[in-house]
Image 1 (tube, helix red, strand yellow):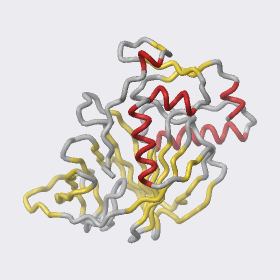
Image 2 (cartoon, helix red, strand yellow):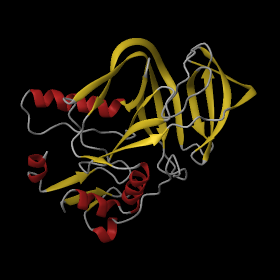
Image 3 (cartoon, one colour):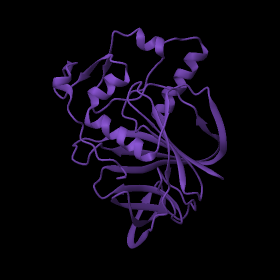
Length: 281
């Protein structure tokens, strides 16, 4: 990675709202469990509810006997390509594109703590911390129902992280799980969104599998607390140019502005990105 960075005169970042992490090697992995079920969700999200357009990610939720893992299929795809490139002796690697949500979460079923990795933009590191998995107090909505992937779903609401969420769950799939930290209902959550419509998950696939649930050690992991991670992420959104240049050892960063032009001047580009975290710490 160091050789790659020093060989670049400058880095071109596609857009302030779409900076994605560099790909990671998957060669340092440990099997935690075997997934019995795999759910694919389409995630539509914004950094702030006032933004006009949504970004999209494909999320994979693996459900085993003991562990649940939620991760970005986009990031995993590019990580897999890089890993293969490494095996063939490459020194430069393919990097992710699109708008993946850079959160990876693993937790043990029926436990209160999750292992979380937040992959910061380009090559500025991965925050690694533990955080709580809440026991949500769900309120069932007797009049609410929907059909998702041919499964009849009931509706429930709960408060979490400063927001109110509405979930649709399928009792025909008796798994008390869902995306991110959501769960505890008498059926798999197939759709969930917050009251500000900033985060919207909807299941688009469900299958029985027998694949391993893996945890990987990434380059430049930064152990920290949940509150420290939240402050670091907020610092990036508050001053993205300074954050990236500091994290890249002072490298020149070209950022594409809203007008489509690339600039590297901190005076013109040091503009905060509107941001509201999923959870208010």
